[in-house]
Image 1 (tube, rainbow, N blue to C red):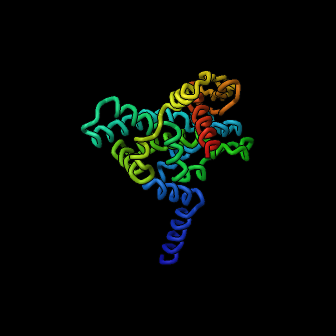
Image 2 (cartoon, rainbow, N blue to C red; image 1 turned 90 degrees about the horizontal axis):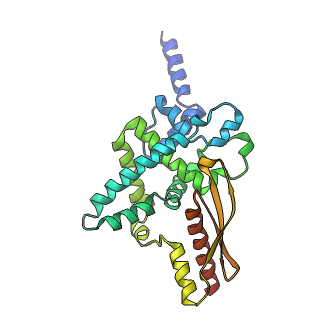
Image 3 (cartoon, helix red, strand yellow; image 1 turned 60 degrees about the vertical axis):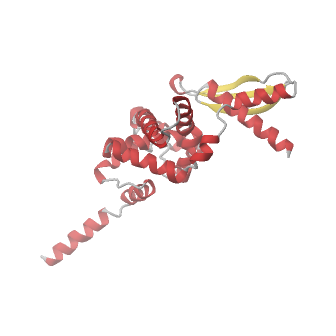
Length: 254
């Protein structure tokens, strides 16, 4: 009887220390949550890039994209609630702009990097080595999909606590408040101050399926290319191109 009990204990211990279970233990520690074994599947999906469909083991709906869709909406509500409580004397315009700064790709990417989410991402064999796990758009999407996974498995309150903790510990909210959020406007003002022609934006390329395109845009001043940027929309790509141009101008002025 004692020997059988010892064997059972060893089996239980081994099952808790498989690479699979250790991975989710580490992820849970990183996120500050407990991932129960019965919830592993949904967290696997939250970390599964669409390139995995090439392996013919999964359908597209089994990647992180569905969860990202949900996470995007949950994140918007959580950040809205946090800002509403944190800034009782600010008007709707301030709150809307600050929310946009927090939920945009750059900020989510910053938090995803600090959580080392790239180390947990599952990608397809043919996409390996392409640096997908370091992509800004991918990591910001994965951050949202994980919010959805927490929301689905543990409820709104846990998802709220996760986002609130990230904002408090991974971001400098004062810096976010003061961030420039319209690089195109700043670049236009720069051009006007030097009596130059206004910046012109041109789509260099676009790729991806219709529902999930990525646009690559270049910005020119006086026919000189000043910067390039990418985004999920032309408007977003233009902002990134303008930002790159301003960084180039700042670097040249040093």
